[in-house]
Image (cartoon, rainbow, N blue to C red):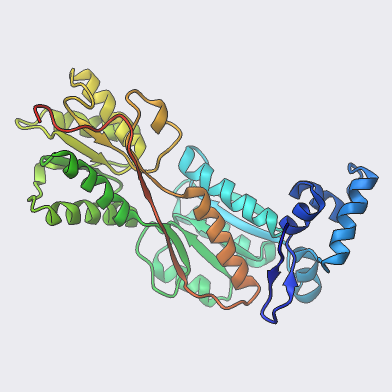
Length: 348
């Protein structure tokens, strides 16, 4: 049986999901009833409305419109929608917003600073109640100015380190990278290379830190020739893989900063006649859809990307409803997923 959430005074506050569970219907059906859509069976409509009345349910959008003239819309900016990374964050955010009876307005910014600034100016000028900004191009100072204007927003996966007072949600990049490198060390690898992401990005820096922390804990000295910069694309992983495998003493394992680059490394190994994992172990980061579907299936670090989108919306809604926010920084745990692309080094 569904239980309603409690507000600050201890009273039950039903959500649209609570009403759906009580009525035995989907969230979409409850939404259609609330919005007086005709495509609902009369008996279903009656059941939903009965639970709506019994639980004193009022849609967030209606309540906000009456109390503060809000739009019921949340802006969401991201560089692009292509690939699992962006699609999963978007899916989680849309689902969470829908449960709050809010609608997401999506804008792609193509990693263009001026375009993103223009979009945010529009969103902040009454078009939305607040925004989720994914991998923002703005500097900390620009985001601080937007915050000072009174426009609520949450940063999803900051591109660069931000001021402590800017609300943000990210994955535990450092811990995830350390877990990946720990796994390779536990298998017996010592000559472990790292293909990093875009230079200067927070995720890149934190994953490098995790890689170095793991090596240091094992007493392994990092080698400059085993660190190669990539850009999160398959092509950069392929180029980095060729460079590393052509070294006089190539690595026995490579940790890539995302799954795309790891796939590029698998291609490079195949072209060089190197068998994975017998002669080379490869680890990625993200656990994208391709990870279990390449051959061999990819050992990787799972980012909770959909949960990242959901959490960003939840944090923003608390800000919009002027509820106390326990922490402006939320870091979501990552998880090592071991598959077929890692094994003890050849000869062990």
